Length: 112
Length: 237
Image 1 (tube, each protein chain N blue to C red):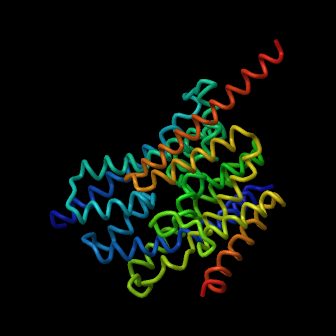
Image 2: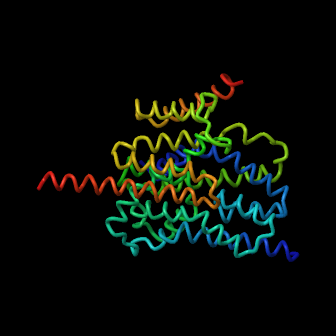
Image 3: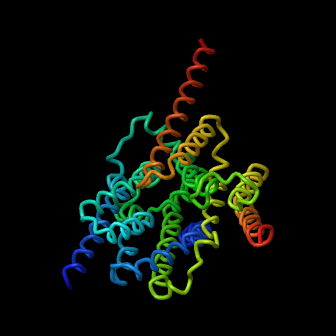
């Protein structure tokens, strides 16, 4: 191995070590971790907050160039369809199917 | 429900995420092939790190001649959100043998967290939930390896992948998971606050805007819950 290849391999394995630590440390500690009740309550809000936080920028500015609050934004139209179907039916698969159908129909049909 | 059927259900429910992650695997492989890392090192990174955003950022840092300490610290910050996922899912895995907890921890991703948050909301005490969890993990892992390899070998042949919008499959699935959990006012307000802060902070590097959004959402949710609990106590008094 040349010097650069070796350093980059060390870099990758170091990244792996850091990532495994962040992901697995709490799982590995298991029962030895005891959260106070208020922290447990706070963690109950994590799924809705983090999942919403991941998708909102993908929906509102899909091209990373500012707000696209317009009917010409297929991500926005597809997401609105998903919310409507999910609220109306509560069916997960149907929600995903209608959202994807709307999104691709918009992208390939309406806007093409 | 057998172990196998639970495992397959987990893999099946992760399918939209698998489709959504595929183009990013190809793009990652393509970037490696065009950059300073050897092809096998790109695959090694997907195999051992298995965290997409930090893999992309590392490529940028390597190209910019960043030092090891900077790359490792950045990896830590970018992947910090996984500790939050682990804390949230911990009550459901704490009873498992250590080898299970190491395995599920290693394979944890945004997508599997989303699937598991939805699953445990519907089945809080599923005895074979860890097999479902593993099914979700391994389908994401196999998928990431496959598409990294495709990108390494044939990446130059797919120049327009990002414009297909396959990542919308992830958006659709996350909506299907989140919306049913918004029934209470504190949860709804928490999601709105997180969405606003995430939108405003999307250009903050290292996913710190995402972390700020979670902190804002959780704070709003907790404040509303306390305020409501206080109101109930006053009514009772």
